[in-house]
Image (cartoon, rainbow, N blue to C red; front, side, top):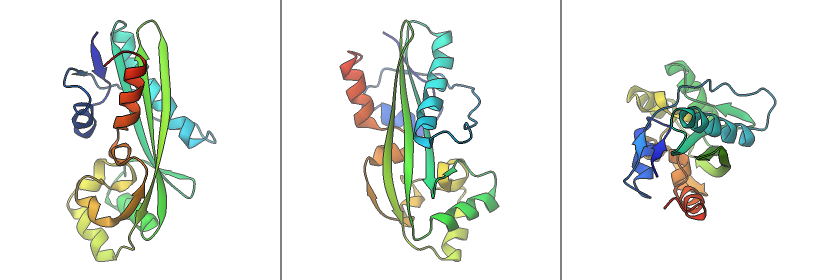
Length: 187
């Protein structure tokens, strides 16, 4: 059975390889707008399913994996920053505080079955000085990351601790995905 990852993220590809090396990458091109007022944990699962279903329409006999990640602080969703000023705003908001990283996961199995899940991990940031924020933004790393940081890269130096799934913060909850794949005899 063909397995497709509906993401062009190198991080998600790297993490899926921890489960299986045998998959194809086919990024989904979908509207990722959140539904205003909807619970964010539901929204990340919905967006993950939306991505997986868009690709599954092209490959109806394949198993398609979709994922979406949001950083949430004080109930505010922090996606990818629009520019350096937006990244600075996000990093200031996260500085010295605890926030949640919500990663939605979806498996589209042939003949229309969709399994959705959300994994929530708590991340605690160190208090950041303006110079640290500026130096981190100058690396360019924050610009394509939800919440303007990457836990697996230079952003690691901003984080005091986590409670939950590290890989979910990177963008793909490996254990949860592996469990769902085993339950459905995919691996």
